[in-house]
Image 1 (cartoon, rainbow, N blue to C red):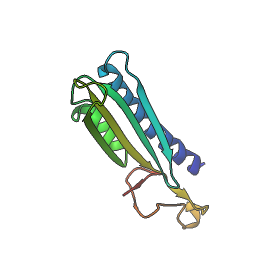
Image 2: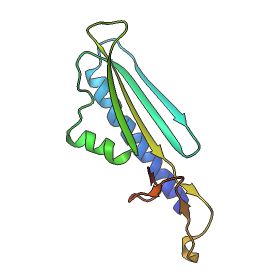
Image 3: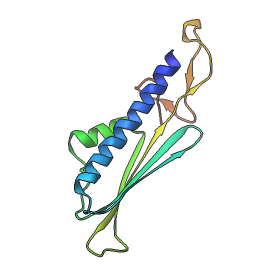
Length: 132
């Protein structure tokens, strides 16, 4: 049951972070443009990349509660703004974040043995997640 709870917590973190990014990008995207989301699984982490064509810089906002939520829920977070290839007045904005997944090793915590390890990283304060 603990493993399921940890897994659900990681999924909830990823979903909430992606929802926050998409909400901000959609609200400020150039009319008629597309929102692109790529999920890249790796052995011990998920990388989420969300891109949109914007009219103005500074989205997503890097202050306030939304940014704090993103920073708290993700293990790494970056935003890039580049001039759009097809529109000289617009920007291509890419938000990239990573969430590490804890590895279950099948040992019961109640037997005094660890039930969770983190790959090449240290345990974070959030149950079921890793940092680094």
